[in-house]
Amino acid sequence: MTVLDWASVALIVLGAVFFTGGTLAMLRFPDVLCRLHAPAKADNIGLGLLAIGLALQAESLAVAAKLVLIWVLAMFVGAGASYLVGRNVLRRTLMHRWESDRRGKSG
Image (cartoon, rainbow, N blue to C red):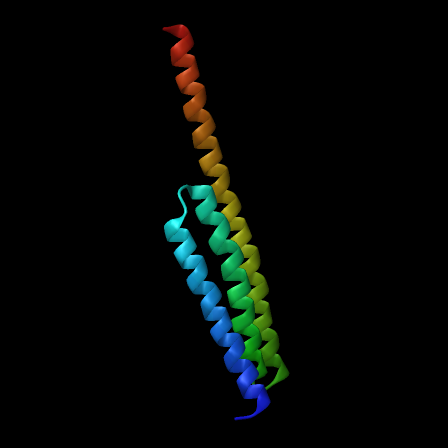
């Protein structure tokens, strides 16, 4: 194995470690917003390391560019999905507090 192969293997294994850490954090954290934050960060780093590790083994520059493009698109999609879920949680929390305050003052 060449140095390039060893670097590729190291990056792929490190990416898998980040994915595993993000998954464990998602299972361990108490609320939705914490569960959104941990995997979003860990998965972006993990996917980046995997993409770079695979790009080192790519046959052409076009294949490597596609891997990097997949990584960039996944970062945008992950950020957008986290925003939408977080906004929905915030709205439900505020609506629930508003309704309980309203019931308490009128009764």
